[in-house]
Length: 68
Image (tube, rainbow, N blue to C red; front, top):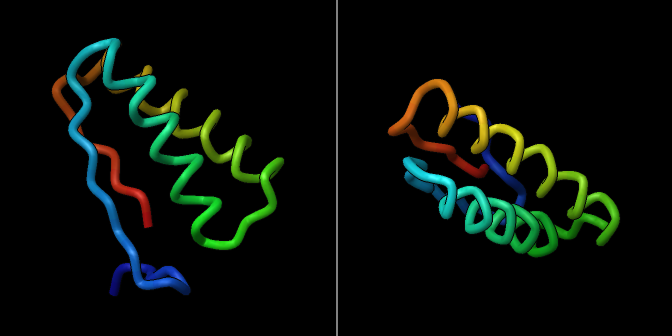
């Protein structure tokens, strides 16, 4: 069974090009803040999501990143 967030949200983002990385970073930060995480932690989540999206673009595009 997939993990379920405490606020019942999930967002899948397609990643295919460099421009998608910035979008993923912004959505991940907002997602983390809406989940109730401290702003500093939300920024850390955004950095991790950005790194993942960058790797998708470099090594596996097109791909998908799912926030839960």
